[in-house]
Image 1: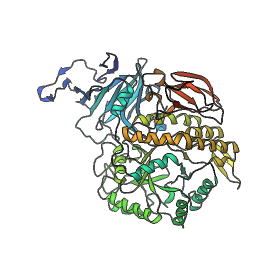
Image 2: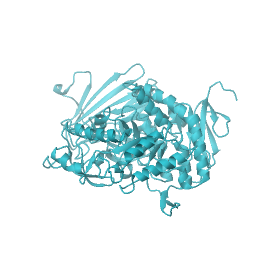
Image 3: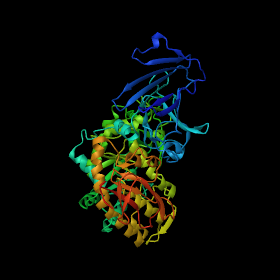
Image 4: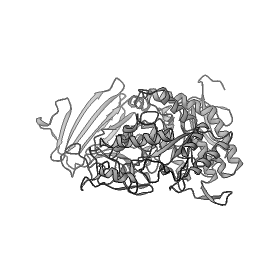
Length: 631
């Protein structure tokens, strides 16, 4: 199937029904026709296809395709040629591919996971858009599997509908249905803007807007601890004391306390042995200007005192082929054995909210962070009180059940944008140059998927920092490589939120402290005002804060493949160094006049800057100037 735009250019080239292996196609029997103007075709005992067409408006037209499988052995599968255009969307891939055709993987259920396991990332959306002004939107009820593969020396994006024993075990239709729309517009930017979710302002209160501004202004401080032995009241006090003492560099911001504030995960009560006077410590932190966030998870350790109660009240997800009174167990992070709250049970949410409000009222902290894991963290044979369309529906239900009842600062994974001011976290990145290179493509992808308010990983990476640097007291602390930390810090200064595990002062290196101080001033004077400006734009029309270059000029083919630059709204282009030892790079500037952030010179757009020099203490950025600016 070939689809043309209004100028007669082929914008979609698709191979339909690739698994049918049968050429004979017949018109549907009268009883199977929909009588709604759609075309109905049938491949005997294999599949049935309904095809119709409608105009969204004068600028956008859409084709709807609905395949119905007539045999479990023939899953409906359509493939789209990626060779004639660049495609974006879907979610994070293992290669952090931007555009999508630079990556590749076999068919996988289209649910959240970890790319390290060969799956999609922590945020997915059934939306793909191409540089030729075409978009694919897949219906939420489709048991969707997606592959990006090479076929006869060309890359293909393939969609398949297929039930399985985990991701799509609950059959919402008797047979698997592949139901999706292909929409075509005059160009990529206009089509994407048309299809984006608008008016995010609905229901937003003044205090919600203030939370967004605060997060765009102040950093997030996260204390590293992978066990309850490391996280203590003294740890929190010392960490925040170090922040306060970094005069001229660090601002207060949010202190994110992970799940080890509890003795056992799922207690939803403070461990008073490790935090005997936390109420006083938190009061002191608030007086100093900090906000405090507690992490919660939908998991209850089998060692938690709440586990027996949750089992007796049947508040946990059960095993599909077992007695419903027996909970299904899973693992998550440090948890070796845990039940999972059945958020579809009408008794579960009131039970949980009572405990959350009790601890919040007692200790007066500011919000919760919802660490929900991915689809694959549910028990494999999960069974909920009410069937889920797929395991990702769990996190949607969990988030919506808490929003409005308790303040939610952020969520760890998403398939549906949460209501502002809740931010979505990027996945953890390895503390390596490869990890750093994955940040920008992931941010750009999530922005295209409709997530403007994002919290990136920590400066220097989230895990596997290999370097050990002695501390003054003789103990050792794992820190990222110094150059890696500097380049990551330079990138983070231009992102929506700066998130720290390690303070710049941890290195005992005056050069790093001076770079951090300079970047803090740049962020305060240049970046934060733009972030606040475009946050309002995002709330009004749904466009991301951090944008790919093609959103500035979708007609410029040079903008389509740049994966290591981004723009803050339309006003600042950022081109970070993301490779070890590099002191120069290629930079592309879209149309317009741009002021060089390093030397202050003016540069014309629609051209490359070759071998642009960027010393270790510098970051390349360019501010948009009025089009009538004279050189």
